[in-house]
Length: 238
Length: 219
Image (cartoon, rainbow over all chains, first blue to last red; front, side, top):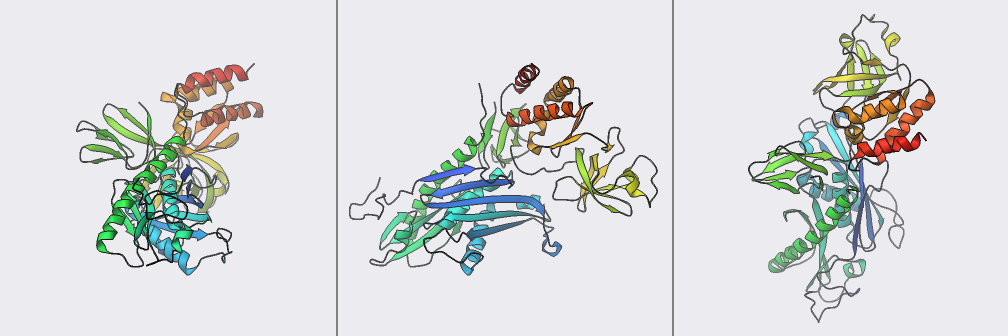
């Protein structure tokens, strides 16, 4: 581990270490596909319905299908209760997550239909959108929807001048030096970027380094996702 | 050899392989585009999905429920995103245009075959023998991905159940199974057998396992 002795993270992780991840598919009985994904205390549940007929009819896209992504944080997911229901923030995250997943979903096979993805954050400790995207990718695969590849998402943070992988809430509120910059990145299984967000300041050189760190972390996440899908069925081979 | 693959995973590599259902050719590789069981036979690689909704195909025999009656046919719910329609012209006998509900009313179940899938939806027919309204019996709903297991290789599994339970069984590709027996007990026994297969659908040598199950149940 490339641990820089001068830098210590609040929870004692190495700079390129994610929190303990876990994943499981088939958690929502009534959905066509579902999955749970967690980064430490951040837990996201995704449920996929469809392909089903788009209603109302004027929203139907007869050229290709539609992917609808809904990100929702439960009121009890954070320490101070948040107002339930859609907010400016959740709408923005829904849209950005939809764009992160759309490139891999072969939606053109279902003209006039819609695939609904509902992501619920039941417990939050930063990086919720990344956990949500990881869970959604698993749930879409579990629903038997044709996909070009899987996607894995991770957040890279810049605390003062130091790059770290998978931010926690304590790190998100970093105040020393230049403060904290959060960079969520989503990648396909073969390392192509489908989504990158950045608000704050970062040098071009350091951003490249951040992408390199994300590529490595996404590989680990991909393996966790793969394991979850493969182990959900017991082949019982003798 | 069977193995579970995830979207984007390379199943086989090499020029001689052909991409089948649920796969795609990228350069030299055969890549899975679905989550499911990968199978290879005669160099044809395909992926059988394990979960998800029923995707209709032409020629499928399905079991559906009449949702609505229009002036020239029936709207049938077969559990798909697209609506299914049984036209009056696809009924083998003469029906008076004002008496469509005398043949099948709203809520009645039927066995039908998919003749065409087009932009407007799915067209059904009941012109083939064995299709038509379901008058009596028991209908069980299972996951449509388990249907091939219930039927078995060339219908081996379904004939075992038929012989052992003395019931007449029709499996709709959309996951609805119609059981018709002499007594309700027989029908419930057949249902139990089907549920056993659904739960153990990944067991290798399932046919033998089912035979053993019947022996134990009949004691």
